[in-house]
Amino acid sequence: MEFGARSDTGRVRSNNEDSLTLAPELNLFVLCDGMGGYACGEVASRLAADTIAAHIREAVSNPSLPLSGPAIHGLSAAANRLASAVRLANRAIFDASHNVSASANDTHNPSAGGRMGSTVVAALLNEDCMSVVHVGDSRAYRLRSAALEPLTADHSFVAEQVRLGRMTREEAEHSTMQSVLMRALGTEPEVLVDADDELLLDGDAILLCSDGLTRELSDAQIVTVLEETADPQDAADRLVELANEAGGGDNVSVIVLRQ
Image 1: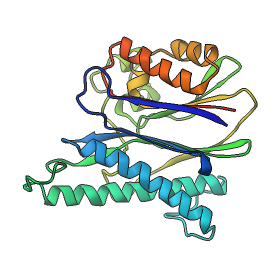
Image 2: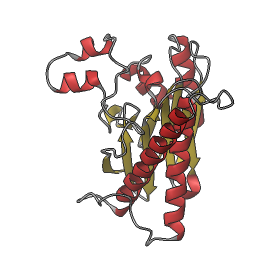
Image 3: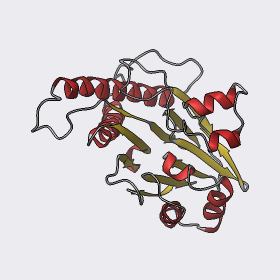
């Protein structure tokens, strides 16, 4: 599996609260989009990405390592292990957030003064199978035969309204409530994790991205880049460049994988 990745602050934000972990030796790729007060988003996303990688790495050396939380029936061992890692990341951010709140009056603590949270989308590959886990509105897509298929469903207020038929997709795209998440890492001591196993075929391209990409580019624009740019690093660079050219209203991060 070839891969490329890029994370950029964008043209509006002053700091980048997205974090990536690229661990090809583990067949693991993680993208997190943090949120919170000054510096808290950066701390949350980095803590999530690092915690997930650490758990997967420990499980490789110790296959009998217990899962965090119950196994999800019908999913592979890899998907359950990745879900376990995300649950641990949730707890790590939740605990860190409470420590931040307790030290909010500490002027020497650059992260003091706000609660922390993060989205996550992560992929763990095993030959021709890919386990995908996510929480929040960072997304995974698969490009196959010129068709871009979403592999995740946003845990956001507007996405929920669309699913319930209370809002059209066009209304959702222009809603001021787009950034309101129904589920994220670190906001509660436990989190419901969405996980699935996907079959990979030769020629597939996988895209993991933060909402800084999907709010600026259409599916058609994304497809064009993935189809016309064979090298995954070049594709990642081009997607970020186009998002910035379109306004760059948020941090934008992408990981591109090619089978």
